[in-house]
View (cartoon, rainbow, N blue to C red):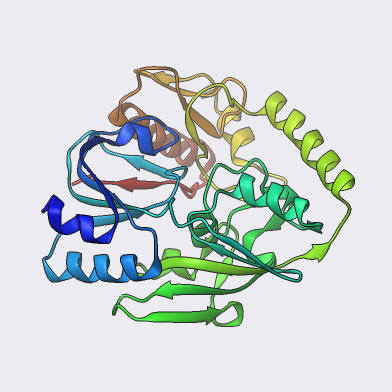
Length: 297
């Protein structure tokens, strides 16, 4: 099958998924493919569906927990679709553009609005999918429209007004099967020095409060409310620093589960589920996961 897949992009066979997610965990994938154009993606997804081949569309892997099992199918990685086009204060970004790169690039073009995203280790596609946010600003605050591949295989432009979204969720989480290809954002002209100062100050704060020295997938659970964050809830029941195998509830921020060096996917999943169960039992709060389990049969 490798020869056929090569018609749609660069193909790797028998690949460790540890290199394609920020947790640095997971088993092997039969194939990973890197399409470069919209036509590549459209033709590839058509082929995979026609042949009934299992697939999963991936960006930077910053919000997924792969299993230790073989993913016997195709991982479609969109990171080579990374063009950025400027039209005045509007910015058109392909889905594989990394958010920190985008934040710096818009500043270099004299624009502001994405300073909040400079520390988010995800792609444009992933951030639209989950309506990523930080510092009380979110992806959909700036979104105008997206280009998608529909579940039926059609290319379509969807306006923001046509899409439901909310706190760390969107239409795309609730309607699987769409593939995000690009997004258009509306920004404003700004001052480069002011933007850089804001980014550097926030970077220092993240270094102080988040366990950035260990692999993780960021915040595990959504905050029930702004004045009752998940980290404080988890810490209040004594689970800060709790360990299963190589996975640990971070001692620096309890809403992060980190890979201390040799965590398996099972370690991470078991710890996530244990934290969820204990919080619900002791506080009656049903925390909602931000991350997605992939490849668990």
